[in-house]
Amino acid sequence: MHVFEPHPAGSAANPLDDASADPLVVAEQAAADIARLTGVERHDIALTLGSGWGRAAELIGQTIAEVPATSVTGFTASAVSGHTGSIRSVRMPDGRHTLVIGARTHYYEGYGVRRVVHSVRAAAATGATTMVLTNGAGGIRESWHPGTPVLISDHINLTGDSPLEGATFIDLTDLYSRRLRDVARSIDPNLDEGVYVQNRGPHYETPAEVQMAKAIGGHIVGMSTALEAIAARQAGMEVLGFSLITNLAAGISPEPLSHAEVLQAGRDAEPVISELLARVVAAL
Image (cartoon, rainbow, N blue to C red; front, side):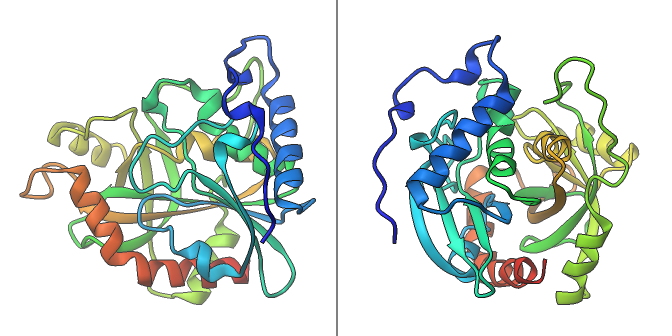
């Protein structure tokens, strides 16, 4: 495994907080850091691991290097339990390299949308053309029990924000690639799919908000992924999205919601969904 040297960016002011900075240039700097720290010049696939999906990194292939995210320009320390806070370079059996991102910045942390999508832009700058986004989320369909993996077919962004700046017009018609979803179903034909609704958080949705999400076409509620997917499309990446249903959403579930419940559902499901994800990534 490659041995890294800490980068001073971990302790310096984040360049993305400078309004005059170009976030795509910062992403190029981050990609240069990743190449230097991991010893891998180019990555083919990028994978963001949300709650419950962490073990997949060990099943995809051989870990070449694992570095703290804060050693890479523009990255923010992970503030949420269930996220490793690291960036890992994995060599797959076919020789391709996967960039595994265990450090996700959530919109509700208050750092701004540039930091939220920086990992995606950095992954694209490393050469990755496929972005796999995973999360733990609440399910609106009563048939989805905790531990069910679901493909994301589309999203509704209720954050009121966008990673796109200025007059940047990006088509989102097939944002969550039908082709990649078909690949995933070739591995598991029983995979269901649904529309993901991103809310700001960090509070869970009220029962009325869940019913609103259902009324406007949503099936899954969470606090990540949509903004990242938009940035991935801007970067020209093909996107595959997976949600692990960790709980039924408020008002659907008879029980109060808790983050401990989310983490426990992730731990319970991790062996099965991580193996599934590893097999899907190998087939991409």
